Image (cartoon, rainbow, N blue to C red; front, side, top):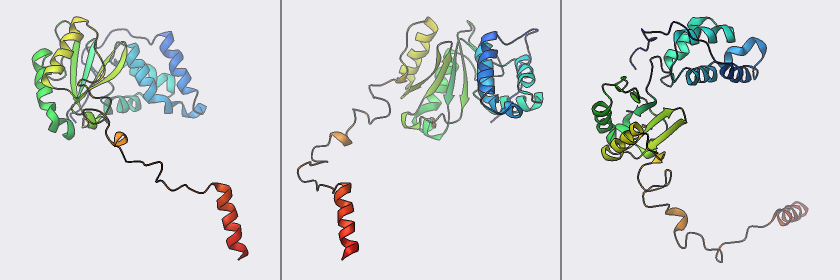
Length: 229
Ligand code: FES
């Protein structure tokens, strides 16, 4: 992973909202008073949502003060995880998985779609609506290739992508049209394409032929009988 640093252009003023402070406090209170720093990851996430999807340096310092941590410790965590954005992002921020299963299934083609519709990796589109980065495995390899898209409504996975359906998805987001999260083909979650098969196989379970298991009472009685004999 390339090194991640704070954005060169920082806001001159930033303060976490009352709502964000309240939410962070809920997390901090889950830990003993001298372990408030254990709430750092959810706190960074809340701060990022509060700051339009990215973490300005002032937010990082404020979290350090809130959780009783050295600023460098907050910085270390924020720069380690790609889920934390250190530069401003678009209204819809795309994290494109480029790890082997997604790569083998066409992530390279999806990158080209991002480059042509948004710009080079890490950039924000001219109208500010879209941005994209490449990340490591997001844990949905069964539906490769896939992306996570974050916006004010939440963070969703979009899976089983092709150049065509991904291009359309990006166009719909940019135009403000509704989009459907999850697999972009007719697949249900991560079931086999065409629908579940295993549990529908006739004869897989034959109720009549199945041997009845002894109930627990009968088992106990049999055990007693064995001990007596
Ligand atoms: S490799 Fe892409 S989700 Fe796992």
